[in-house]
Length: 130
Image 1 (cartoon, rainbow, N blue to C red):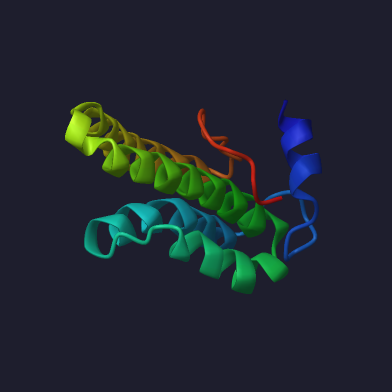
Image 2 (image 1 turned 90 degrees about the vertical axis):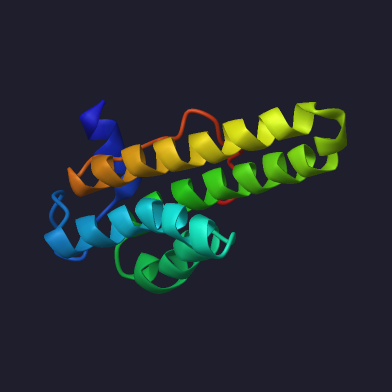
């Protein structure tokens, strides 16, 4: 399993299969930053998108985490729009609460895994960005 993760991530900045602390921190920000951005701005997808476009060019480790986080944030955005559209039915309010809680919990878990040097796959995410 671990060798599959390393094959998926390719080479890092240092050329070694172990990410540097800077790479781990940036990858953690791709996940944790979405939680903070969602709480203050509501645009959590901007954090992993920015990291993917800037740091993702230099490090496949950061890119892998940013892409995974971006895909999850797009999924949350779609679910949030559906929840907002159906809020008048009552079902949407439940969906909005579930999406919010999932975004916070899975974002924190993803950040912790990234800081440990592991690749984290969200359990529910549309894989739109490759």
